[in-house]
Image (tube, rainbow, N blue to C red; front, side, top):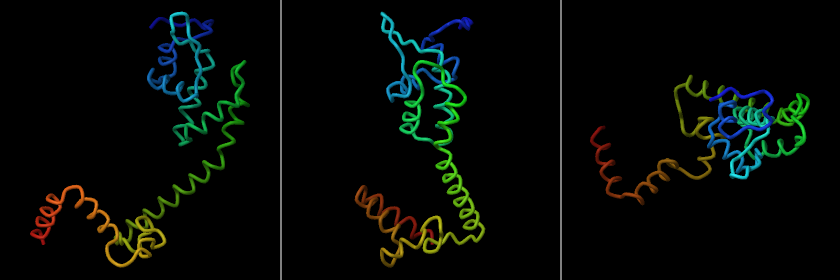
Amino acid sequence: MAQMSWKTRELTVGQLAARSGVAVSALHFYERQGLLRSRRTAGNQRRYTRDTLRRVAFIRVSQRVGIPLSAIREALARLPEERTPTREDWARLSAMWRSELDDRILQLQRLRDDLTGCIGCGCLSLSDCVLSNPHDVLGEEGPGARRLLVDCVRSCAEDPVADSSSARDSAGDG
């Protein structure tokens, strides 16, 4: 691709893809989702303003930390259309998500700690395990292997012959 002049005010979709490292199909998707805007030339080709590069970077970073596209769209709607967003604009937007991200980090840390404890004890008990059955929810459903019963009903309904043959195979293994 030819070197783009710093004076270029608009980018083609290919130039935007090359500069941002995002596939053309993803840029089209972002536009359909209302995250980006372009104008169309007389030949119906997309043209993006240069500040779209920063918007694409913001979208990618936001996605990387788990922000849903709907929240990203709402945040981008708060940015000015007539100028390139400033550092303060970006700081204001990211501050909106700080508590949500802190909550998510805390949740992931708890999950990590529970997983370590579960693997450490080695029981993987379906009745006591905080990961597979938090607060013994399955015990409230009644006695027996609740998950196994649900899985069996599903598989028997889908293919009763395969289910009976797998039961024969596992009976012979014991």
